[in-house]
Image 1 (cartoon, helix red, strand yellow):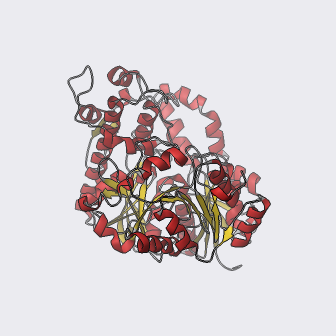
Image 2: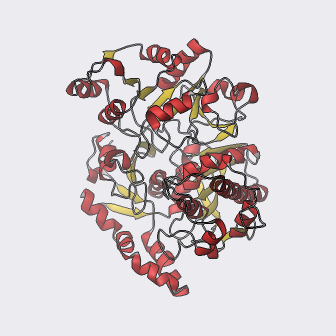
Image 3: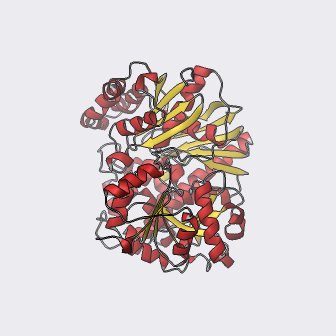
Length: 576
């Protein structure tokens, strides 16, 4: 290993901090800091994530050849703060109020050195190029259109490019701050009473309960018509946010303007009743975002003729959008990287740094994104004994758990390495039966404590995908919401959303052999190749990372059984 090129990717300077490790051109570890410090979407320096990446391969920090950062702070400070302040005097106060953020960005290299002791080379990489690389180089597509949509990078908020035979080129530099679909989505998330840069997925889940064609109270216009006035298409690949409706570019955390409030009413507080009006706003937002992006992608397909799409950036986590892209049949296949947001951009920084050092790099299909903290059965048993947990070690854990699932029990399922990204893909999951329909509400009331309108996702044996869902490609990362076939809705009602869609995960022998064994055992008993799969956490907490985390969640909720490694733990057997 000593002669192999070792790159450490770091996401720091914004939200969702993380670290990734690449050895000899292969991604081998990826960890999110929130899993360790228990602060969702943390902005803290990813010390624990870095340490975990290194410890997995017994590396010391100065055995790393290069640290690659997902942001170019010099370019970012100049474009986002200095230039905009010169062009618009209202931005001067924003610059002054953000001085601590500017100092942090300007000192990233020193902060990395101080926190790690690293003495080698640290490289900066453009944010959206990191998103491009994070998706393209793991997709297995030789040629593809590359699209990145998020809040913002250095100054750009969208970017379109082409990946061709391992080389990335930019074909459209996209919209610049404050003209951002991601930030506008966050602004509406804030207005509707949820947390920006955190709860955007809740708004996506709320949208199908609304109707953007309804008339806005005290107006002659529909919600959709007003949102068309807010987000204005200005060309094949361009749009503008009418700045009279927003405030986030002048006052941090204000988000929306007085004009928006005068049109739609006061901001909803988190404990206020959720009205149809709020649902209609969510619907209009989702409809307009989909309309803008699909318009751009259709134009790009027409201009460049590429048959495959690699999507990244925080907006890539919008499963409904991704499903609409597939439904429009613009591309033969799309790929969405499982950690599509900023944490996953650290993957791209690794690839870009490696390519520059090694001189060549080709896309490769990655099946394994289980790259986080890993624990052996011996590690697990030591924890169980230290906590005086009554357990049974079972060599046939799969059939035992499948039987409990068939009996409508709620299972905490903890196996091997943690997933990278916000979705639980069968290693840090809470599982239950997808039928009857009431299982959704039972799980929510007993364990998850989420908003009742939010859907749960199905995991399916991949070979049955087209029998149950309207999709003709794989969806291994649970990032595509597709229609459930009408004749199958009553078989798996607990995982079907109000609009008859589901955010499906396809499971193969290659991408998760152990989780697949459990699905196979459940299918053998039930003749249903689907399980309800949600992340192993409660509302407001990151996904569990360690055996200790799993036990804490299990013991503090109404999960019936914890299957952790080969250990079977029943709640009713514990001495509470």
